[in-house]
Image (cartoon, rainbow, N blue to C red; front, side, top):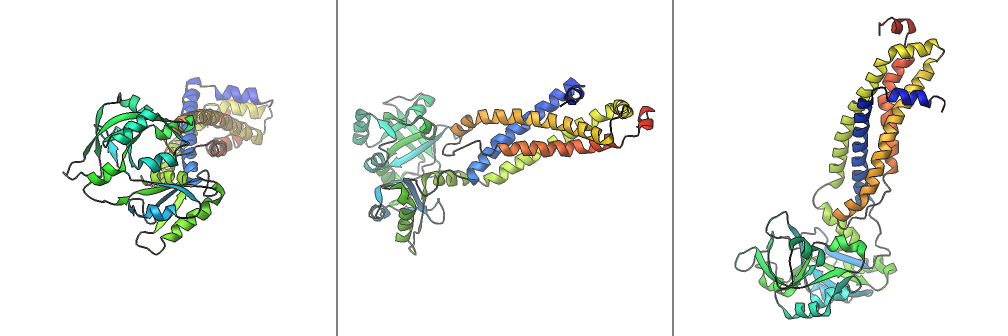
Length: 387
């Protein structure tokens, strides 16, 4: 610690350069923290089949392949299953493609029975929904986002399902709103728009009698793995084999349909740190080059080559680790925001400690060349201006 004032003084020799380099490191590690956290969430999904009381059954080969509606009765007969409902991906948006709406055609009785502990709907809204064929129940956050109110007629465009008349536009009557009981789940329901499966199945021009997936609630969460195996065994070797998994795993798999998330994140980080390597390396090389006469004086005063090497490495570590800790701290603060944006993805700070190791490695890589140059410094040549 006795050399810390010297290291600190040399680090801030050129304040502007140090500030800009430090800001670059902070931004790089802010990105590292967020992207690694997301990648870790996909690679290590929280929860597993064991202990999960909500299951999802999809086509074994692809989520884009449908399942027969008749499978609901067979799944309901599986020991351990307490309730079954069915949903199909509608692929909807309001007015413009950027206004995504998570539109779900649902069976009223089974859907609200299965989610009875999760959703809050007034009796009046539920009664109106049951009585209105074109009725829709909309999440309160979505109502607020678009300024909708009960009684509005809302046209939604489907990217998949054409009606019998060939139109992709479906019109619904908002008869009520709903909210979630658990505030932590609010973001996952923020874009949800519920309407009648019967209207959907009767109105679509193809795919009648099929559903996208089944949701099941199990009686005993500890038996979830066994129940999953029973459901899949029921349809083994049939024309519509199934894959049953926990609801969280399904949500992650659904997002992964967008592409190889891990590859994209690693590619971004690779580009960021490749640039940072050259930026920080140039800063350290220039800093040492400007101080060659001073380093020669230190050697004259008795500082060994090894001590000078350690001082330059320490300077590099101080710069990189300080910036990294600030960036990782900011990414930790940003995790709740990212969690709200990535609905269904459970983010944690488990991936952040790896950032400190990356910062140390970066400091060694960029600090070692100038440190070796300082260690090998020839006093006479340095004081004579030949280096």
